[in-house]
Image 1 (cartoon, one colour):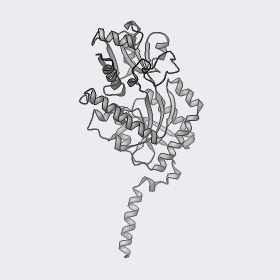
Image 2 (cartoon, rainbow, N blue to C red):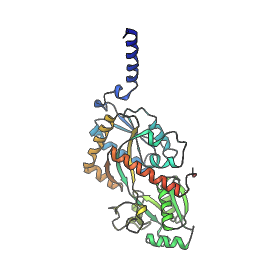
Image 3 (cartoon, rainbow, N blue to C red):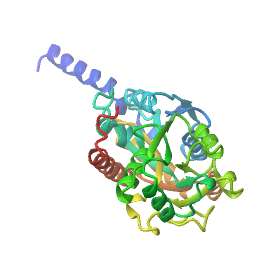
Image 4 (cartoon, one colour):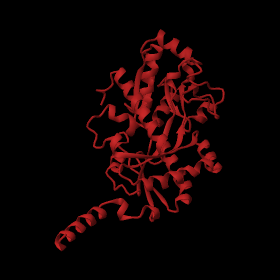
Length: 328
């Protein structure tokens, strides 16, 4: 081989190496600087709180700081797209609910990222149970009574949904179909206003996570008819699951999880997964998560990928069967 051709070959190899995250930094040394976590909602939301408490807990296992950055907008899509386009070096992660990863693609074919292509699952950190809530003055005390009332008053029950095309919107569509009822859906940008309207008897019902409504339910200002969780939640042991009331198809708990850009090296994913895996035995963290009305449940990359695939198929089927694909 001639010297010029050898130099040319080495130049190509060097260029490829410099452009590769695996060559740019030995994965065994990762992380050597703080890790940025993009949360695609505003500060103070449930996802944001879960991100902060799990990130704080995992820092000691990674040996680096984790910095939370809130990038809200466009139904979680702005922050999600930013991570999809970030360098795949393990220093930019996404912490999100299922919506931008397994739901939104069924409504918006022209996304500026491809959920199934542009991310690698790292770990689920938290599961957030959801309650089926009504205003007490509606006069119903069970799912059966709610369905009976809805059938007697078609279209007269107002049901709040936090954002069209989200997980909870799709579960309302499942409920309507399963129960054979018609509801008037009222979209909200944030749960806070919906709760105000429930308390003021301007909204009849909604599916909501526990933290912002626990005090109202405890005081009797709101009534929980059921939980969409697979089992009863400790905070409300007398509230049945949807499965217990004969609607197992309504079972759904919202996961909050970490994902990385698609080409992140396997060694980096493995190191992150091992660090998050150690959180499962963190009793102090589990208590903090429980105080949020959620459950600490660490799920690794392989199982997380399976869950995403299952969710993608499930939500896609709901969208198709409910003729919602033209919603956005």
